[in-house]
Every structure is written in C-alpha cells, then in structure tokens.
Image (cartoon, rainbow, N blue to C red):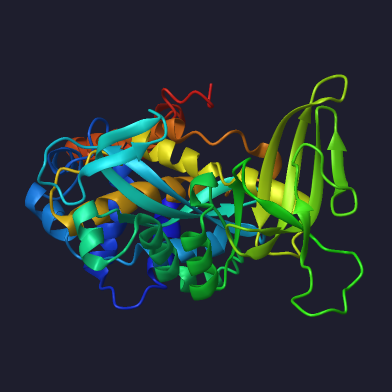
Length: 406
C-alpha cells in the first residue's frame, strides 16, 4: 500500500527520473524496516545499495516540502493548521555544522548538540500532525554574520514554506509561548498570509478598549481603559464562551502592549470543586474573528508535532545521521520525519474512523521488518519458496510481534 502511495506522489513532482524515484521509494521503506541505527553502514546491511551509493544520493536535493504537501493534501481533513517548533538532537563533537548549545525541552536546559526547526501541518479533525519541512538551525556565529536573531531565523523558515501552506489552505500558525514576542509575530504577519495563535505570559500587559464618552478637547482621543486582570476579567470586555466542570473559557478583544496590536484573547480558568480559580492560562490569536473555542482547540492540537518528533527519534533514526555534510544531514532529518508521515498515511489514515486505534509506529515497523525478512527468504531460496508466497500463514508471519494484532 505504501509503495503505491509513494509512487503516486512522486509522479506529481516534476524533474525526477525513474532511478531517483525508485531510490526515494526504497529508502523510505528502508527507514521503516531497519532495526538498530539508521546510518549508512546499516542501510547497506538491510538495503540493496552499497554504502557509497547511499552517501552520494543523500547529498542530492529532493523537494521534501513538495512531496509532503501532496501527501497532506491527499489524506488530511479540511481543517488544517501549521505548527512550528524547534527540536533538539543530541550530537557530540565540535565539527558538525550547526552544533552548539541548544535548548532541550525534555531536559529543561540548554545542551550541546544540534537543532532543527520543524514545520508540520496538523489535521485538527483527526488530531494528528504530518511533517512538511525541517531545516538545521545554524550556529550563533552564522546568525551574527547574517545579522539575524534566532527568532527572525525561525520566522524566515516559515516564510520560505508559506507557499506550500497557502496551497494547503492553511491560515493559522500555532506556536508555543517562547515565540510570543514582537520580532517573530510581526515578521510572520508582514511576510506571510498566516495569522498566529500562541500562549502569552501571565505578566503580559493587556489593555481594555476605551468605551466611554469622546472628549471634544485638544489631543489624541483616549484609546485604552485600564489593564486586564486575567483572574478577574471585566465583563464589559470578556464573555464566557464555554464552561465545563473544572474549567471555563472567556473571550475578548484587547490590546497587547508588547505586540502593539489588538488580539483575540482567550482566558482559561481552571477551577476547583467550589468554582474557585486555581490557575489561569492566556491564549491569543491575531485573527480577531476566530471563535474562542477554535483558538483553544488549535493551540491544544499544536502538541501533535511533539509526537511526530518522538516517533522519528524513537523509530526512524532522526538522531542517527552519520555524516557531517549539511546536505546529507538535511536529507536524513527530512527523510526520517517524512517516513513517519508516510506510515501514518498508509496504515492509519487508510482505515475507517471507527476502526482506527492509537497510531503505533512501533507496530508498523515490526510489520515492515517482517516483510523485509520474508523477501530475503524468498530471494535466497528462489523457486523453492514460490509456493509459500500465497500461503495463508504469511499474514501471521508479517504480524509476528505486532502488539495490536494480538
């Protein structure tokens, strides 16, 4: 099933010859079949090419963004958002491009290694993320030479892929609280068609719109009427839009002093059994017409990109690149994340909604490894094994070790 899917998408990408298409299809399957490290030596052990061929082909350009755009358009539902998030990759040594001190969210501190800026499209209806494009984060010296801050570099990555997002009818970019800063927000709004959804700091200054009488005297008319207390929102400006046991949502349009613009702000009040507010979270959108519950739901969906990184790190070798060549590294990182998306499209999206279980890349990899081993048996034993290809027991061998098939 995945072979037909991959070949159908590769057929829509211009400028590729048959040999290159066969290699891309082969290596995507290989990343879903390999056990152990996903490096060039292991690819030679499990694959059909030698190590040098893998190295040379990883250095050639492949338009992963276009491939993933076609994949997303084919399988995802109509409600889509973009999610951007950097991902820390462990890496020792001092000579790999981009290596340095980068923030690791799981460790809660900066660690020595690599970082990629990953852009994914989240299918809100099916609550899952599909990879679009990733790029290696350069070191501080390169950024200083180019005159860019780190946030401006991240915004630039989104800008470079904005045409693909527009083709997928994606209108909103969701980022976490780290990106709730004026340089990033303003650049996204100026350079792309996207609106930004994010979470704000609790000490951010939000100001109410002035609703009183207009003075006829000299000077600028009064614009603001006090600051927002997130625990006690003014009912003239905030209304309750959703309430459930344990939490409620308020929505309102207020001015953000840091961003120098009006925002749709959604306050999440988490309450105890007596209805007393225990904790407040502040979500915001630059799209003033977006319903409050959509702001809340879209931000929650952002976390699906973290599961994409988790699956790629644990099962398709996101951190296993054996090269110090920047082109090969970029190919490897995008291939690893794309392999997870292909597996999701071929083996999860293809099922009817009522039959879908939680997506398990571990089970899919077990099936691919069993199929690879069976093909090797058929290849080694030749015609003597041909009668077994249609044996009903083949299904059980292919699903050997698969947890969901038990």
